[in-house]
Length: 393
Image (cartoon, rainbow, N blue to C red):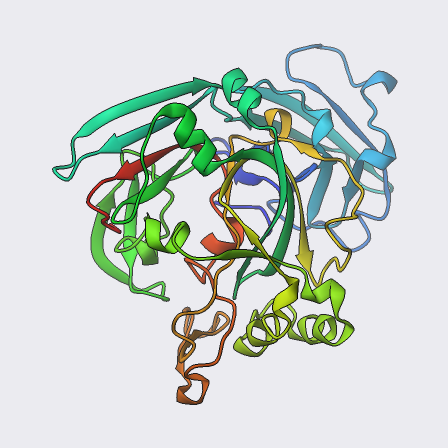
């Protein structure tokens, strides 16, 4: 049972004897959070007087003051617990069990078992497949070798109708430089796919823009990053990724009117918002795809600060993330007539609208996957595969 919100960690209620057990995977968000299996009575969270945390098995004695967490490092509500990621020094490729005790006025203390995982792999692998689907070349980098290559810095954008517009400050290695270092070729007529740590090995395919099952079970032993509704098209073609301009967007900060339009649009990333983003071409900054090892991200309009001057912790994925992140900016919409709308909760799908009046109008693309992958831009990547046949599935 998934018990987390839109951002943070993935938390799962552990199977077993009904005890208060939770699991989470560290992410580069700076916080770990989970939802309680059962909401507490009104005011329970506000009345919390202390939260104690220690590694499970480290002591058979009751919690003491040394286990008390600084109030600045956690937040508790009636339904959710947020904790600073730095409380969990979990090494890559390992998991650690913690014991937690939460005390609230006029309530019995709550005790939890909390397993925290760090899935970050220690290597990054590039493979090349010929037109018959056979692996012809492989190159594996250690994390330390990748770190040595990740010296470039840049800014990127991503967007989708589920999450709106994201902006990134990133440090990493440009895809073209990584491939050149590895001696791989990526040219017109080819395609590539990202392999992600948390990608499922079996996916129950659904109809496009819908949650309705097709009955097809897609086997994914290579752990490609694929959404159930995109099992038919999950690779990046050279033409789409490298063969046209892709951009980091700055109009929302440079032009007050454009900024207001995006603010009013919220996270819908509607055609109107995407159209106004290209009305000032001088604010579209060309970028090249990057494999990022560190980054900071802001979601507009939740945070309207300029990512170029935003000051905060520059997240280090070695400690708080499970792998690398693929960033490649946003291109221009090649089919402005067809638009995907925000999720319809009743219909359980993302409706598609046909707007002939938009024909020929320039706009920023919705993204490779308008239902989330674009906004995510493939996190947790432990490798990429290059296909000489240029296939998309």
